[in-house]
Length: 361
Image (tube, rainbow, N blue to C red; front, side, top):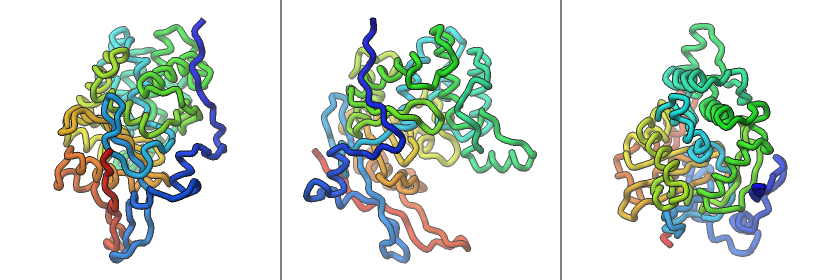
């Protein structure tokens, strides 16, 4: 009998108690992370600040650089999608799916027409009924698509949910494996047990907390250092031979279809279009994971978390780290490097900008 993988189920209201997280609040003595912030300035004066934690890891697991606490524990949220989609990869050919369908299964898409079309194709080819998806319905992330729907008097459908590709891929995997589609999103379902094993293998840790994501499937709580290692393996699949084939296929699909992974005005798409050697996947509550296949430091994995979950600070912090690693230049991705604070009239009255440097290990 296969032994059930080790996991810790976290009640949604259970507070974090890990020592590493206490340390960043100064609860265990001297706080050594006070300089890792994104600043919100109004009229050049500090108004607010967002605490940044990030780990930059080589494929062998060694830490290259960090800011804040490299061992800060947090949920991967949608940054886990390239790893969750590993269960679909063996069955792509069986269903006549190509790299675009795999990309949409790893996406947090904007609900644009190009996204919903590929999700619908995945469902049709795999024999997935849209009514089986338990992710729910929300308005498209993309503002232009929301406006178009309103102008036509149409309501969004389950296809517009940013996780519809992930859920369709999971259901396709269930059909291929002969598993029940009923309850596919529950922690106890055999497919989710298999996905947890994949997460533990690629991130090389059994210290994984499990709770429920916003779309209803399990999500995984790990140290940033472990998350960064997962993205390092995604960037250099040969560093993890037991998972090499699936990681190669996933990484290639993300680089081939950056627009499907996110869409208009989104950092994942913009980064992968600007840097062909990058793999990028955001997660809710201001998380981002990045894999870099080629850099002056070799292949790298990056995991970044804004502690208070502020999305407005995430892209600013991520581009700061990418510049300090030499992955992007000073003029690259300018629209993501600093954000303006606008008043009601639309005038710029402040800025959001990084106020930290990487600390090299």
